[in-house]
Length: 114
Length: 112
Image (cartoon, each protein chain N blue to C red):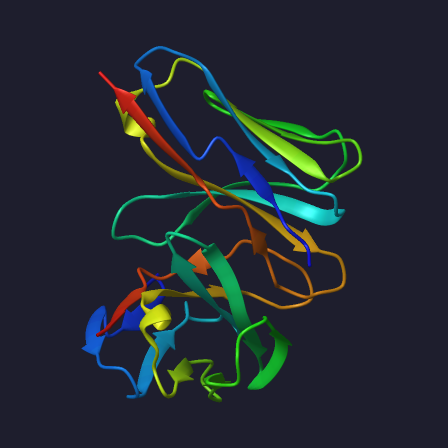
C-alpha cells in the first residue's frame, strides 16, 4: 500500500510569491490534514478536509488556504509569502474524520522563503 | 487556546539508561497519541491512549494517560541508539474532528 505522497519535497521561493503544495493520501483514506512544522513552534494544525469539505481550520491567516478534490487528493496554497512561512509542511491522511484516529504522515514539503 | 507542554525538549543519554518524557496540559483530551519522527520523514504513530489511567506497553516503551486525561508520559527502559529521534505527543480535543494539538517535541539522542 503506497503511503502519503507529497510534492514537491523541497522548494525555494521569495517573499511575495505564492506556492501550491500537493498531497496524495493513502488509497481509501478520505480525510486529509495539513500541519506546519517549525523549530520554534513545533507542529501546528492548518486545516482538515473530508469529502472535499473543510472540516476544521487552525489559527493561520487567510493567506493559507487549501482544497480537496473528489479523489481525496489535496492541495494547500500560501499566497504573499513571508520569511516566517519557511517551514516543513506535512500532510496526513486518515480513514475518516470525526475522531482522531491514526494519522499517516507524508515526508513533507520543505519550503524556504528568501 | 489548548496547549500541550512537553518536557524535556532535549535529552542526551547513554545506551542502557532509562528516561521519561512528559506531556502536560490544563485541557482535557478525548485521546492522546505519541509519534516518533526521524530526520527527513514524517511522524509515525507509536500509540494511542484513550481511557484515563490507561497504560500501554510497546516492548521497552511504556505509555500512560493521566486519570483526568490532561497529561501523559512516555517511559523508555534501557534505551538503545535506535531509539534516537524526535518524540511528539499529540492530544485530540473533544469535538474537533481529526485536529491534533502537538507538543513541542523531545529530541532524544542515545549514545552507544
